[in-house]
Image (cartoon, rainbow, N blue to C red; front, side, top):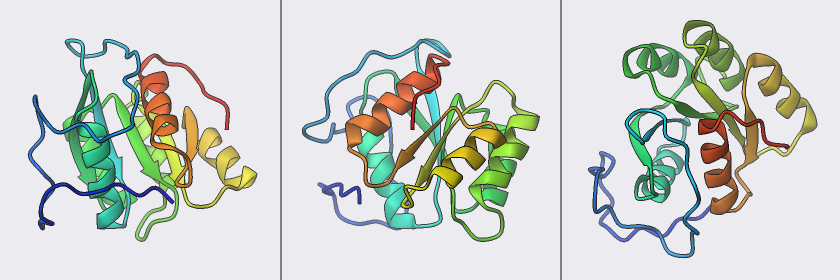
Length: 164
């Protein structure tokens, strides 16, 4: 399980993002791809608010990354990504209303250049294959290190498929 220490009071809304955001400790700076004006626009989808906000906090201060939004389920993700046009989408697999596999399929149909990184607490080959068949570029377990997630984001931005 990914645990991210919070350095700010817990709020109902995600923290304001942008230059000068605190960088979580012990996360190596990694090379990144230039997508839109040198910045990779990242969108998070997870039905667990604490997980979403933790991931936003973890990723927001990284070089070349701008978090453009978040959704609580696949249905919201499909609608919001049409408007926000992110470069990389971090997609939880198991969610209510529409799972990450179907959401990935629909998003890739609407936005073929969007890159999807599957995310799940289940380290299951079948889930990985289903996400890849739906169009995901890579898959990261929620048990993986923060560096592994960052590598997946940067790799997706560089249009590289990463192994499971």
